[in-house]
Image (cartoon, rainbow, N blue to C red):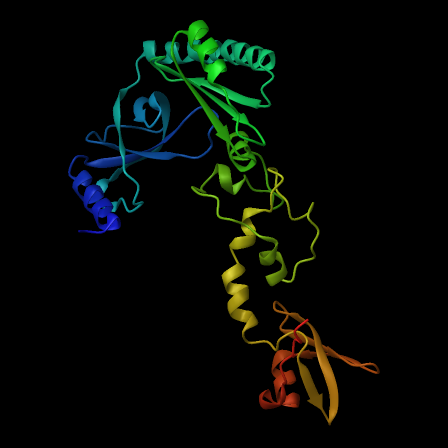
Length: 296
């Protein structure tokens, strides 16, 4: 039986024969572009298009001009561009945005009546109004079955209540990171890998949670970008707590600086800061004793 990964590759390869080009499309309030397939390369930046997404029909704007399908290497399955948007489509989208504000107010009132512990973030209609999607934050799972019944009777369309996390909220809202650039999650990140405090420790950063947290309140995603490089570089340094001898005097390795390539050693009477190369020259790699951890 073939592997699932092989099936996916086959599907994507076969899919390329369905399209001649792919384009990047942006949606309202989303700064990043998503790719869609097309057999028409007559699209220009700023053109309004109707596309098929996992949620249904939506109106988007061309943000990346057509590129030959042979250059598509994303690995994600492409949904199609259905057509160029008409004036009717644009007008319908504007009406939907106004109706979504009203629908969000209704949902907030009904959720409060039912004493549901949920923080509603946004509301969107698909272009054909066949579905309305509510996004909300909640600490625990919410039983919204009664809310669905009320909303369905009042809004007369399919209802989708989507629980999102704080990182998803930051992705939707956007903003600037500590680096001064737009948030990674709202520009190019597709998935949120688990970020632990061990990454900050591995990079020798001061454990200051507020400074290491992003707009979402979680640890900043960029902690993972250089983590592998730090892990590899640390292999070249002596282990913290290991013992070293210089002129028959014992020192303990108490700190290292990977960027400046400096090793700090000390004992009760002296402290030295040595470049990594000088450290090994004076100590000798064979004479560095690893720290022994006693079992408690």
